Amino acid sequence: MSDQKNQDLKAENLEAENIDEGSIKIADEVVGIITGLAATEIDGVAGMSGGLAGGLADMLGRKNLSKGVKVEVEDETALVDVYVIINYGNSIPDVAWKIQDNVKQAIEGMTGLDVKAVNVHVQGVNFPEDEQEEVEKEEAEEVEDKE
Image 1: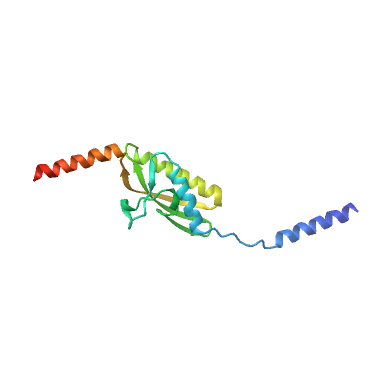
Image 2: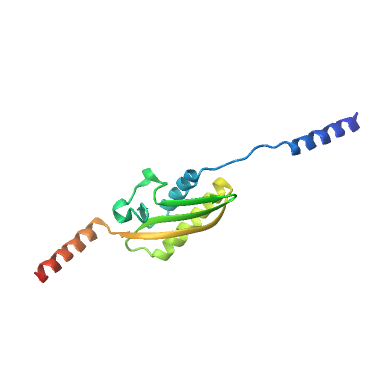
């Protein structure tokens, strides 16, 4: 009887290996949301930018996490572009490296895709309100001095 059970198990295993289980497709939008979340988790990131067209005026909060993200998924690889605004006083290269690392880990961990590149585009610097008021005041004084 044990020989019969072994043969049945072997036959069952062969059948299981031959069955096509289908495919898994992950939408670019899903990878974009994962990217946005991972990028905004980093200290020093003020928010996501709308990209080249939007610029600074299009700085977006956490509600539109796929904004400011461009994703290209081909086969099992992903290429990601992230457009961010950095808080004033932070080292831009350090923040960018942290974004790259966090985004890569998040995408690979959640989707299983191989991340080919994470390109970080710093679209601007966010000044705290106090410093922003000082900058605007200085610019107004410069204009008055020229007149």
